[in-house]
Image (tube, rainbow, N blue to C red; front, side, top):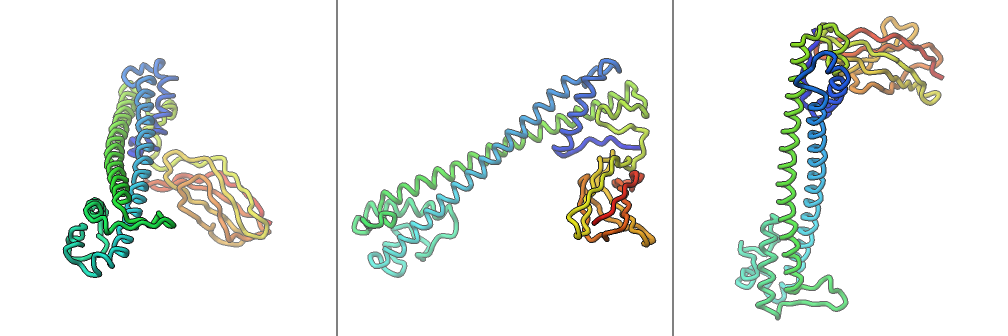
Length: 313
């Protein structure tokens, strides 16, 4: 018997919910549907799609904040590297008390390894340059190379804002993801409730109305249905390329394409393919090729589609 397991992923749940809402709206009153009506299914579905949209926007905002933070850190690193290089003649070429005062407290004047350490160092350099104006470096021709308290302060504030932005957007993205998962759980429970209510009405296990709600008929076999409307198209001449297209089969999670070449005892088998279209290569030209498609799932293969034939140029 075919199962009606509720999809766990967003795409599968939305696709089933769309069918379920339409089916409940069209047939619910006639069959006596009481609890899981088209209106309540649609409300839960709308809540899920809205939550998904919000989660996607928050993910984008988080990525943008991460990019801004990376830029701020890169600018800070460049300033620290410039400070190290240009201040050696004034402070000394090896670590000492003035370097420690400038924030290099680990016995080294090398670049700190983490952004957090670099952020703190920018603040210390800012204070150092305030207290040691003799170490301030300006260049009228190249102001972008200035080593001043103002530059250090601006970089410190930019890094602070960027780090805060990452934290805020990460929290917002996490909250939106949680809301999206809650909405997904809600629609999955709703769909499970609809499935159970249809069984309890009862809706006969061989009724085609199960399909109207997006479900398999309980009396259907566990294996996939039959792929339909198989269409073949030739690729560019001389390439041995064949484009195969078909309508999805119920319960199929993948497909195999079989090509019978004249003179060969068994058909050539290609797949599994997740989509309902594929492009095959390496086939012979000038002979009639006959194709069929078979749906597959964890219970096995379903029946083959009707065959279609083509001759490649």
